[in-house]
Amino acid sequence: MPILIAKEVSDMLKIKLSTVYAWSGQGIIPCFKLNGSLRFDRDDILKWVEKSKKEPLSCYNPIAQARGPRKRKVGMK
Image 1: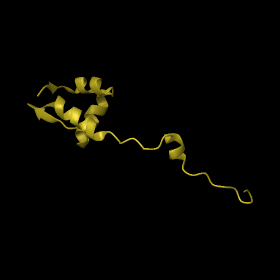
Image 2: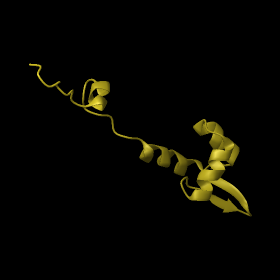
Image 3: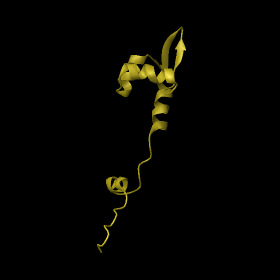
Image 4: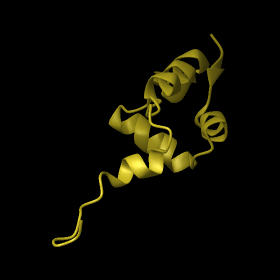
C-alpha cells in the first residue's frame, strides 16, 4: 500500500493541488489523515479513477449520436 501526499496525487492526475484539497474536503476523492496530514493510498486512487470512467457509446459516430436525430423542415420531403 504505497502512500502518497497531495502533491503526488495532483501530479499523478494532472490536476491542480487546490483541486486535490477541495475534492478531499468534499469527500470526492478517497483519502485519510495520518497525524493530521492528508494522505492517499495509491491503490485506492487508481481504483477510484477506474470506477470514474464512463463506458463508450456503441455507435460508430459518437458526434452524430450526441446531436440526435435531425428534424425535417415543414413542407420538405
